Length: 129
Image (cartoon, rainbow, N blue to C red):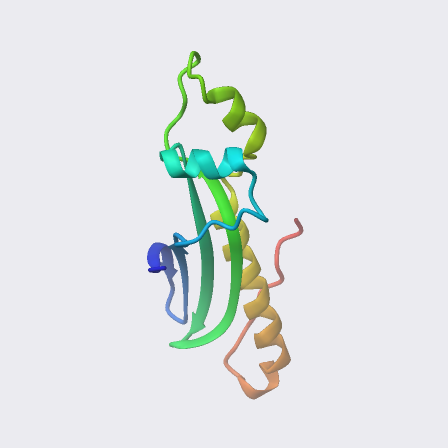
């Protein structure tokens, strides 16, 4: 499993990195045969996402989101696999956003707990979601 950076963002003090890895093994106890078949045919991809937040080079937050499945290419209307794929796989294009938001929340908690030790740190209130 090799991590590849798929998204990153950097400010003066913070850096957020989101990495994806494709697992070597697809667990048949977690995924149905229809999902495994779609992944093996290349119609879908399975990724594990890992987001990390750094403050001045020191990791202060992280989050993982495993078994993220998404379609590789859209199916045509007459594809024999379209119905199986649509019924077996819930496509969520927000996986990357979710894992990054969780990592940022983790970093906020970490930094809030040590804020008295960091006099130059100002944490904005998170937006209401």
